[in-house]
Image (cartoon, rainbow, N blue to C red; front, side):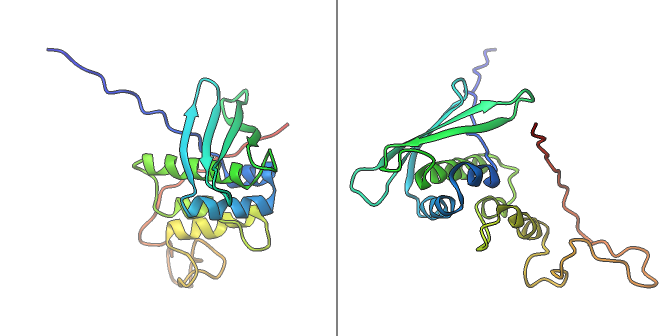
Length: 184
């Protein structure tokens, strides 16, 4: 009996939105969201040995821009953004770099069968006030069914017990986890 191993699937990195905003800034990030959603990014490649993400982004000119995003591993093994370069006139940390990272996130989430349907929107949304930290609540609400327009969208993700009720927790729960990154 012989066994042929399937090739290992190398997942592209998953970089959180606030890290992308810190790298490129709010305005380039928001423009990068538009490019990523419009399908302007192609040829995304991830080299895990070099911690290098590359992509091709069709901008306003006939010739597409080539982006390169260098990442590094922290002592805990987490990937961190170092820099992004691009062949556009801006040359570094531009909207094309943001679009490449966001498209990489979307590709990663599409490859993961356990990804919840609400994640891509939660990872790529920044409120109009430009605060990436405020996006977590609406993204989390969408994942657990407490988004805008639901009965419990008044600010609390867990309903408060009413008098005489032993527990007012939702009938269906969604297991979740949190990841924290401590920076020195």
